[in-house]
Amino acid sequence: MIKVKNLTKTYRVSRRDAGFWASVKALGKRETKTVTALDNISFTVNPGEIVGYIGPNGAGKSSTVKILSGILTPDSGEVTVNGLIPWKHRKKYVSDIGVVFGQRTQLWWDVPVIDSFELLKDIYKTDDAVYRRNLSLLTERLDLQLLLRTPTRQLSLGQRMRCEIAASLLHDPKILFLDEPTIGLDAVSKIAIRAFIKELNREKGTTVILTTHDMQDVEALSDRILLIGNGRILMDGAFEDVKKIKPDYASLDELAFHLYRRYGITGGEA
Amino acid sequence: MKAYFSYFRMRLIHSLQYRTAALAGVATQFFWGFMEIQLYRAFYSEHADAFPMTLSSLVSYIWLRQAFLMLFNTWTFEGELFKSILDGNVAYELVRPADLYFMWFARTAAVRVSKTLLRFWPILLVAFLLPAPIGMQLPPSTGTFALFMLSGFLTLGVTVAFTMIVYFSCFYTVSADGIRAILTPVSELLTGGLLPIPFMPAFFQKIITLSPFGAMMNAPLRIYSGNITGIEAGKIMLLQLFWLIALTLVGMLLQRRGMKKLMVAGG
Image (tube, rainbow over all chains, first blue to last red; front, top):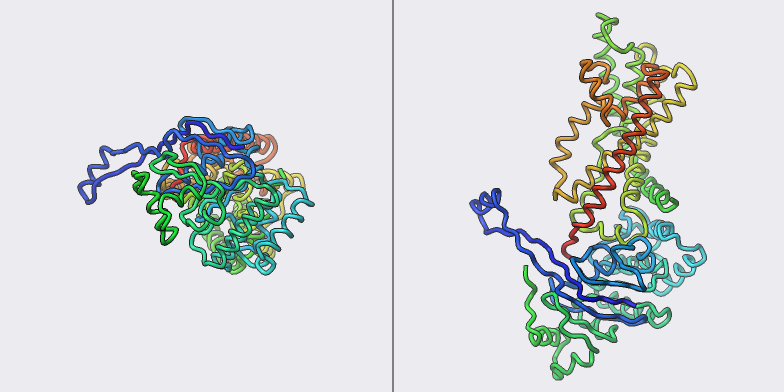
């Protein structure tokens, strides 16, 4: 059970005008502005849910995921996940979660994927039997047989992402955070990954929190949608409710456009 | 503990792959050592008594320094670690149930050990085969050799703890290039990498010996050849232990504090 209450996170962003003189002036006095990434956010996620966390670039999605996974400390507010506070009990807490950052890699570049998996097994102190069972299950479901002995650097993006997702699940996490897991992938890989996540959720009851810009991900996976814009939760409901906004939508992207416009979301302030 | 050892092992096999780099390193380091010894021989042939170390001690010092260059130098950094702080890949390290400081400590030590494993033995082999006075000598006793090994381990620890401080300074300065540009030549001089510390002015020697730099390669290389013995050897190893603990604490503090103000932007 994930409980988030009145969560606020701000960043300081420095800014100056373009050009030489502006940069000379900035040597003396820096102009910084406080940007509110998350503004008093509250929500609850029940075990076994798949929640699609959507919103435009800069809306605060990644900040939320980073706070929920214990990486960032918020300015104020409360978060408890299964009774633990992510940033306070980080080491204990992270054993129970899996995280995939679609734009980063956790696999060691120059060695075969299986070496990275073995290292993760030791880092998470995963039981031998559990590890072997998960490895064979993930290998089968994500079709990794031929990839495991290949160095990461020689994998395509789609192959790598399948390995990344497997890497995050080897230790049997109860909650899986997926931060843009399908970014840059082709149709085949996207569909394979969606099907896998759905299965995982059904069979193991893993709670999944998914951030994405791909409305098809959301449609295929999420029972529930959280819409975030300008640091606030604007909508919390089922995908069916979103469809009611524009029943005659031509594409899912168009639907997202109308959704964002209806709630007056701009690209987020910077 | 096993997690950190696995991390160490991973980095070890990872960098054992680079054979060509090792071969080039062996050639360079051997040639450098050889030329340096020729230079000192020329000076010693004039006034052997005017120097603070015997020629044979100095020759052993130089060969050991060359053989263990990758283990003991203060300027080997992993670009990947700086990069992961700057581009946010460090996020993945932070979702592990392990301590970032010790993961990176293990990793940094592993890089040094693996590079050294590929390089030290060809250099020492040739150095031992060379005739006196330019050949490497055995240590005066097995006890001395044991002290050398122990002091070598401490040096690895102190040196890694020192580089960790440079890594984590990145949490505060955006780019560590400036700090590295200053520290590289300064620490090279102060650790005795260019000139053994006994060759420096007396006053200067006292300060360096007490500083963390004196607790690095200076200790094992001089213990080996009998330049530091008995009580003095015990004292310098205590200093090494002290600096190992002190630098580790400073590094951990920098990391903890840095993480509180950390921003992982983008993505």
